Length: 301
Image (tube, rainbow, N blue to C red; front, top):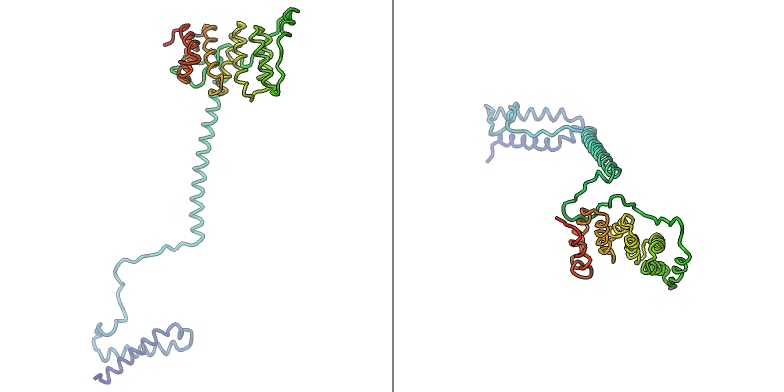
């Protein structure tokens, strides 16, 4: 059985609980002073019933600072976040600007070196290349696009008549007709006329399937005419234009033969070494005789 005093205490504690839950609403009205008065009366009643302020029944009004670690949250604002992000962006932009300047300087240096190499005389370039190379050096003293030099006195009547005897094919493929006519002139020994005809063909039909044949035969027309300096650029151009083209290996082998005729054993050996590495089947097959003949003309390391 509860005593009267206990009932008063329980009623007071219930009143405190009720007042605690409705305090936010009452704080909006004028009853806040009355509630605080009732709370102070309840606390006074508690101290009267429980002298000594025993902590088992009610909490003291004044307490010490709670011990333990407290977690503090940074008081940042949206403006602070934006400033931080702007600082990071400025740092990134500065880094990118520095890298761009370094790359630009490096590109300028490379460009200057390339220009210096391209404009340097042929005699100042390295004379020897160790091992097989993918692109052969341009033969010394050779013009990139030679043009036939017409004879000062012109052809005789007998020669003109003989050339007119060479018939030009007339088929549906005009480009092939032009090449075939150049071939017939070369085969008949009319080398200057073949040079003119084949030069016209390769210039007018650079993408025709016969063009690889035309450039190779044009080089042969010059070589057979005793003009290795004019022949070499055409052989080199035909080889570099497409190494898998039908007459690319022939041009590389004829280039070696042309270098032998020009007393340039070093470049002849380079061409022969590259031919043996890139076309081993032809070196032992269709072009084996010419390959071995050229190897016998030079001493290569």
